[in-house]
Length: 205
Image 1 (cartoon, helix red, strand yellow):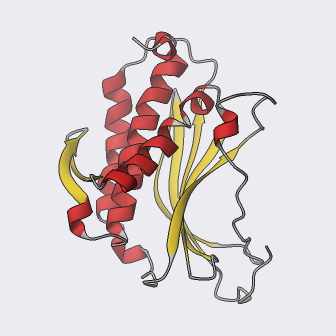
Image 2 (cartoon, one colour; image 1 turned 90 degrees about the vertical axis):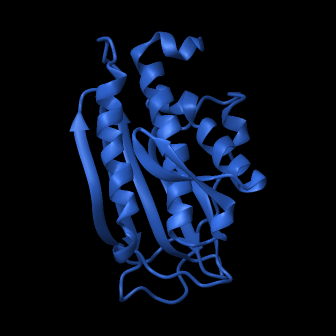
Image 3 (cartoon, one colour; image 1 turned 90 degrees about the horizontal axis):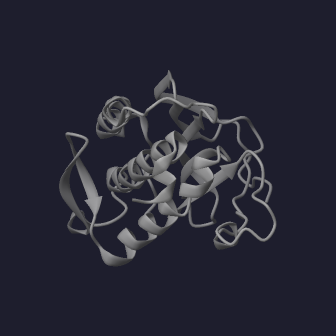
């Protein structure tokens, strides 16, 4: 057994990481960014989901989400964001997972309870398309993580991540809530961000 799983925080981080891998795959499928054959229907947490099976796509999603594991465990990750861009690499839509793992939680983790909570997010994602925006055919996407504090210098796992060059919106974004939960040991929100109708066409770099 992985040593992270010996602590409640390690168990929580493992479940959340696996959930994020599936959720990111579902989001990319939802947006129609790749042909349907790049995905396969699977059952996860008793919900039918679309799991990426194209080798490069599946590898990117897997490596990105598993790379967050030690930082989720330490409570350093504030948000995990799936960002969709136009051809100028300007964000046009963001799926934001805002999370907080209780670092003082010391009770035995009931994984079934945590999975029950996370299952509701997957169900919401399957019906989220009406509140999303259509994407240009020449766009792109990526997964970005925002940290509460930077990992220590010399942290080998942290060196796998590079600073984002995502352009910033000048106006406060329009936010559409999708799902939220607040219960020990995990608080999580999922919401969409879109640029404000008054957003300038050339946001700051």
